[in-house]
Every structure is written in structure tokens, then in C-alpha cells.
Image 1 (cartoon, rainbow, N blue to C red):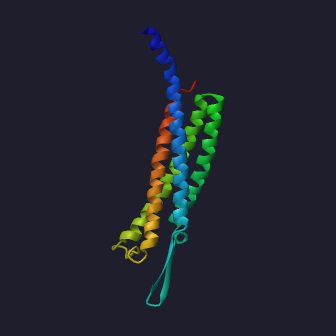
Image 2: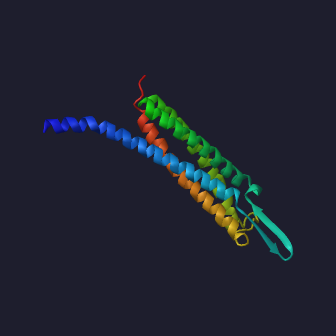
Length: 181
């Protein structure tokens, strides 16, 4: 029985390390995919309608908030890809808490960018969907349903990206707390 306990305690850190790396790789890939999907949906969202001979169009580029979300997701996707490559290099070199601290800082910065983009796009999306009677802003999603649905899907995917980046931030922080002075 003591032999089994020794074997279990030796393999446990290796299994934990492999699980951590697997979780990191999985969530980084999901974050990259979510960033690409959200950006693509937002950039390609446009709709043209004809109301009584007047042609109106809605595009993401007409809203600074939607542009901010799209470009934020592009930046986060690119930097998440770089962090995935960095993680692969870290795994090959061995576990060093300092490397995980850099991943933590990266994940925290990327999460902060996505929070800002999601907040801005959610605000303007809410106004587009519901309007604001106190200020006289009318809702536009009744007329531009396709545009609003694509923008809403893009924002929803960005929130999925935010969840992935939050998990990455927490796990990186947990791993980096073992830093030596």
C-alpha cells in the first residue's frame, strides 16, 4: 500500500500540470475562434432597406461602439494566438511561475479589452433595439432586423470570449502565485 501512495503522489503533479496545460490550450483556442467569429459577424453586418423611396442602410462602421468591438476582437484574437504559441514554448522549456505571471498579465489585459468592447456594443445595441423615449431616440431594430440580429450575435459571442478569457486569467493567476522572490 505505501508503494501505491508514493506512485500516486509522484504522478499527481504531472497529471495536474497536463490538465492545466490542456485547459489553457482549449480555452485559448476557443477565445481565438470566438474573437474571429465575433469580428467577422460584426464587420459583415449590414442591411439596406427602402422606405417610401428613401434608401436607408445600416452598417457596423456607422457606430464607433461596433467598430471598437470588432477591432478589439481582432486584436484579442491575434494576441491570443501569440499567447498560445508562447504557452507551447513554455511547456517545452518546463514550468516556471514567472512565465505564468506573464500569461496572467496578458490574459488580464485581453479580458479588459473585451469587457470594454462588450460594454460599449451592448449599450448601443440596447438603444437600437429599445430606443429611449426620454431623449427621442427611436428603435431601429424593427426596420433593420437582419443587421440587429447579426450585431446581437456578435456581442453574444464576445461575451463567450469574455468568459473564456476570465477562466484563463483565473487559472494563470493561480499558477503564477507560486512565484519565487
